[in-house]
Image 1 (tube, helix red, strand yellow):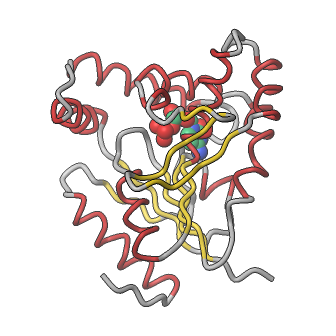
Image 2: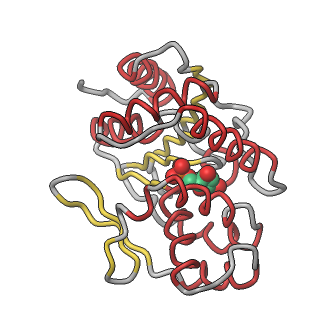
Length: 229
Ligand code: DC
């Protein structure tokens, strides 16, 4: 039987899961599953194929055939659709919204379930998403749910965009985040909710270092792993 450990990190968009899971995978020496990237690539593939996002059957068919891969480069992990590096194309607000729409279809989630589970191998996996602890890895040894108000997340997003020299309108961003939350939390299948056995961390007033420390302490407590920082 596999001894691989799963650290499931769920939470709404813009809450800081990406940064936390990258750091955790790094200190633990585990692989990282960015499940949001899979839904983002699917949304991109659907648009590229000229299919309609509202056509569940076509989107599910595309999900079954999705030729997706992750590759490590010096500047981080790149995401490929077939031979095309789509890493930057899938990081726009529009790509996030399209991902949230295709992710709401039960048949699409079913088509992508096994593919996500195949990322698990020893010594372990850090899994970033919305349903990692509830559906994809319900027996994960560690489940963490990050939360923060939509306003705090929008503020952080504005600062990130400004740091990259891009324009950022707080009102537009908070509206988009609220819409995406609404869709992700209220869909019939695998909605965004903390697993009953998850540690919920409200990151609103915390720095990334504080969140990282809280997560590491919890992982040590639950697994007995020794983590060198
Ligand atoms: O984490 P992210 O912002 O890259 O995710 C984009 C969208 O994909 C998100 O709004 C909802 C969907 N998603 C999902 O439904 N389930 C996951 N496990 C990950 C993402």
